[in-house]
Image (tube, rainbow, N blue to C red; front, top):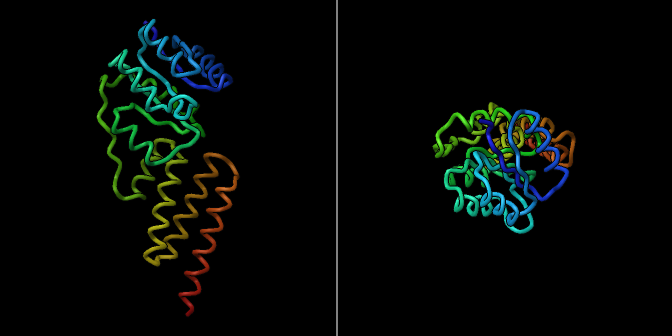
Length: 210
């Protein structure tokens, strides 16, 4: 029996694209452009997985997931977002979501994620990220989540700055810049991270020659 997926996103182009993509991969797909439509779909049919956009006008992905799970408690939840953050990823893990996917490269991650989701038990074990931010970044890189890895490295760089480890901070900003560019191409964020790296290298050189 084909896996049934409910896709919820307020952007119609995204819905159409995902519907076509997932049907082409052999999944049965229903779509909803709002929390209310998603609830109506869940009341009318049983789904294996709900694929939810994190940011929508009426409710965010966390709230939509809570509503859907009232109707279908065994529903597996995967969220995706164009506004990735380490805090939201941690919250998704605590709420037993199966995966938290940045939109920057979700097409690379989506099908492997769905295959893994359907192999795992209905209630996943919460992901425990390492406390060490560089180790956490390495995990994100291994999972293909470049944007989250860059965020972890930027946080680590700010800690290095606080400790006056300017060369370490420069290296971390530099790597964060590379990963951000890999996720989203050249942007204001890559320029900002590059400038922070160059500034930290300058301070390190000045301290070394003082």
